[in-house]
Image (cartoon, rainbow, N blue to C red; front, top):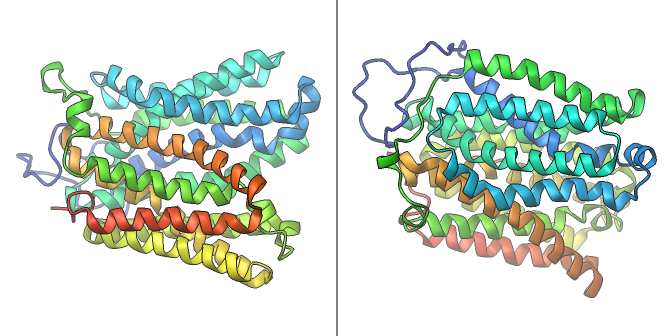
Length: 410
């Protein structure tokens, strides 16, 4: 691995269009790993903050005197808030210097987790979670474009994959560690550790991230004009279909694995998913700059193949484990692929385009969970893989036929 480049290394102009020549004489010839890993850690904190109540559900239920469904709603309200607020908050903060905004978001996560750790009642925690969802919406909108600006446009996809590796790491390791802390020291201690870690991360981010200016008022493209850019609508449609396909099945992975008995070792299956998801991120990062469309189609094909395997021979344990691993690999690279595309298309307005992806992504999570529940209740668990297969087929079709959406980097 190349040695890290510090934040003092010159970075790409915040307003340079991807693929355009830069007047600057010096650019990073290696990935600036110090800054990218700081960004990955911010993503990690954002994801763990979102999902941590799921791992601490029994303890929080008992201590707060609420039902399990109410604690579960702390995750749902976070995601829904992210989907609703990503676009308007991104539009409102476009003039703020990017590093200042990111550091502020990390401090915000520290406050959200700190308030949750000391809150005496459920309503206070619910309010904190709503605030956390708003912070997350801005984070997902800003982080991708920020990572891609830190390097030459030809290496933007690789930089994005390093930043996005925080997501699968949060699922594979962050949640289990937080759950262990909650079990041994109490759920409040787990949130407290997250708050303290976020403060340290804010310092690291302030030192490691390069400074990018916000957008000048006269240079800002409107939301409608960004949406009308050739390729943006197909990218959003592909994202919606792919994420719907994943969540229709993943939300109900426990009943889906009952026929094979894998549900009795679901922690192992989810670890396999998480580890292969990390591999998917790294693979996507290595290939996204040259083979974006191909990688999107391959990811859709792998997810579809996993659904076929579970649908046809979902009672064979080793096949289910293998299918879950392939599924994790396919889904792990999806954030890199589906965020690289709109950033290339939108150029200077990448953050606005990313906010649309964020809203689409989180909205699809909620709709996917609802749709999967309807299928489970009306048709049975056996239909879940086939509904997911149909949806991911739509994603593959859009990606294959839209020339403007997934073009190769300049």
